[in-house]
Length: 302
Figure (cartoon, rainbow, N blue to C red):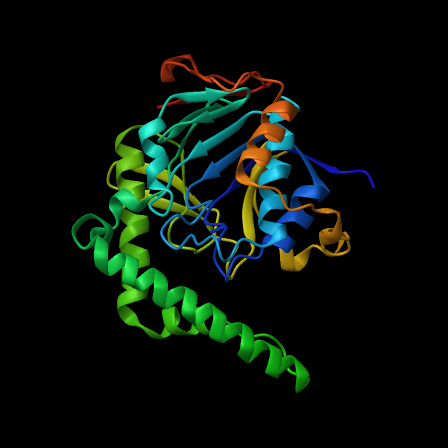
């Protein structure tokens, strides 16, 4: 099958290592495209809730697919979020075509794009981290309950429902938080002369035009792979929201879990290093040296 070519793919809030992660669907999507660059915009591996007891084969297959892209010299930028914030201490780290940075600044067709996860603008995250972690556990529990509800609903001949979306849409505080988050992000982006701003964090896929006191900004959010199964794609000089549920081509791809062989952590690391063809001691580069060679696109890590 010929893969669909995409200039840039932005993925966020995958939450590998949790029960709510749709790793199989994500793998089908990744196998259906041929990206020139990938931006992993936070909460890729959920370190908050990570447990050795739950790490399905498909979760490891997603990691290996991303490693495969790096082995092929596809630029992959990892921007840590709040659930994988421990990686922020490795800002500036580079391994092959993989680079870890806190934010990205792109210049595409003479327009400036600012990409970051977004948790820095979450008041709960900044002042009540324990409450945010408790909420994450509650959210994951709700997703598990939702899976059971959907199983029963489908057996009864009804469609799937999203309990988390219903809760968000019915709670005025949640709606107000999302609107406040988007307004704050756009105000700061406009103040810094960005034409576009891309976030994750709030699990709410969106592309919309926003007028601020400082100027006009296009706000974009890549959504998540827990309930929305979405990503942002840049291709043919325009941005769009990818929705797995509207992609029959990706849905038709067969994922053979039996081919995945369980490995110890030591064996897995050795095989990954061999695949990347690098020495175990990776190099760290200065952030200002980060760039991407692509017609019409210039990327700098910050």
